[in-house]
Amino acid sequence: MLPCKEIVKILNSEEDIPFYRRAELKMHLLMCKHCSAYSKQLGFMKKGFKLLFMKLTKTDPKAVEKIENETIEKFRKTSSS
Image (tube, rainbow, N blue to C red; front, side, top):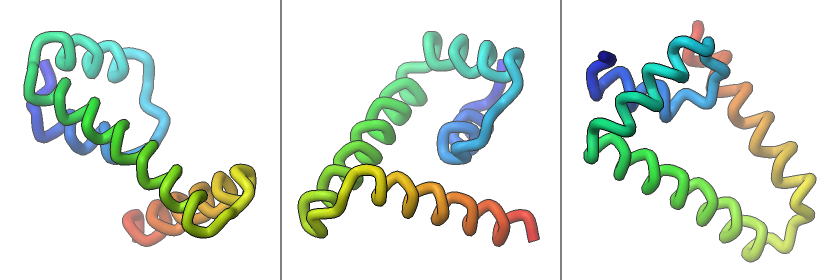
């Protein structure tokens, strides 16, 4: 089973992971109440920040998605350097 630190990295990465890794992630989340709670909180925060950003900036949801994807791509490039 994957350790909790690895689960946190996977949950925060936004990258596509192989099937076997997703299965390990799901199994860990079923067994570990702490990681499961973290996963739920992370999803709640992502959704909340996106809604708040759209509300404050009165931006089109498609524009928000584009900005989000560009930001994620920039983070990936800088973290791999």
